Length: 335
Image 1 (cartoon, rainbow, N blue to C red):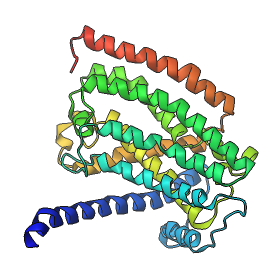
Image 2 (cartoon, rainbow, N blue to C red):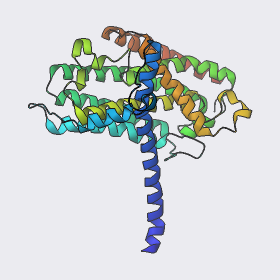
Image 3 (cartoon, rainbow, N blue to C red):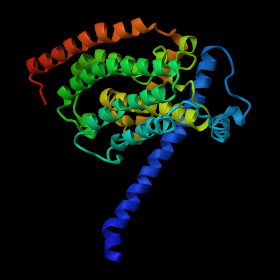
Image 4 (cartoon, rainbow, N blue to C red):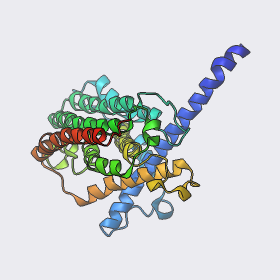
């Protein structure tokens, strides 16, 4: 028994501890992401934001969580109860399992697999199922229309995101996220990938249903969209899943374009700062972009959203993949 525990027990226990640490950190940052969003938008709109629950309002996320998880969960009479309850759980779980391959530092990753980027893209793409299930199971016309909107929106922008990722993979020659961070990128290559970074940042707004692309939950025309029939804990799971997806997409942008845990601009004298600190700072910068965009731009019309995805981003990313590939061949810089 002792030998079996040595072979299987300690590695399994160590793996469970790492999973618990990652999930705990993600949930902590999700909670305080809501606080940061309310404070930053309050500063942009010249108001206070949360300020009464705890010092500087720091306990407001805990109060909101207690309120949501202590309320009664109401299930519509005509809803498909199993799918109705499964949808928020699925969306929330998918937003957590994707963190398995994200490298926070040189040796700080749960599963350093060779096809990490494919795993990440596959898991993030499955989020649409949770939204579709929620819209269908609610047996509400508003919820169903919100689910259909989300499906078409996510599919439209995932095509562009896939081509953006292809352009990065062509430059680095690997599907491993750690190798993507460590791959040498000359300045001209960074300039070449900069337009793809802009497309990726806009696409992740649509992928996570965030303003100005929050059409699946547009209050003005859908009175809440796919979440309109949800309350209490089920609504909280949707809420947590959305913010966890925001942090995940920001981490993806950090790994693909911003150098991951490496010091910014390759500045050597900043290397004394731990890598996970740089990773957190860069991820927080992308999250600030989410909040800034929400506070600045009005909601797009649905036809504008589709036009941008299919008639602007798709042709541009197809063309730019050819430009990136041709430049690498011309400079003899293929990995």
